[in-house]
Image 1 (cartoon, rainbow, N blue to C red):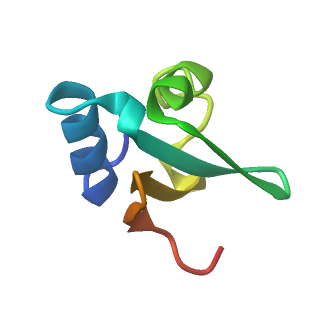
Image 2: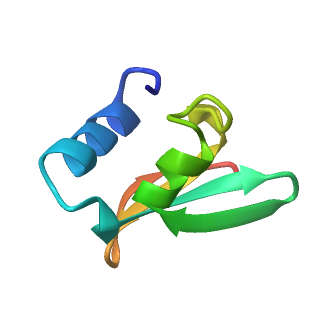
Image 3: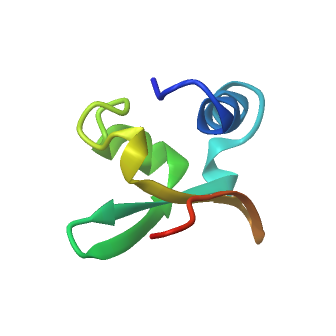
Amino acid sequence: MTRKGRLEEIFSKALHADEPSLYFVSYRDFEDIVEVPLDEFVKLSENFTVIPASRITKVRKGKETLYFKSGV
């Protein structure tokens, strides 16, 4: 899935123990930052193979930011 660490914990919890539609993933797409619901991101990224974890810039659940990559 993703490299081990905070992102893996967030995605595992969201996909297996919570409601994935509550989570949103922001990722770099060339020069833009795109935000999509987690379930859509999993489909777009073909289970994290097309869009690697290194391009994820933020993960949020509702208004709460769970992960933020600084220096983006």
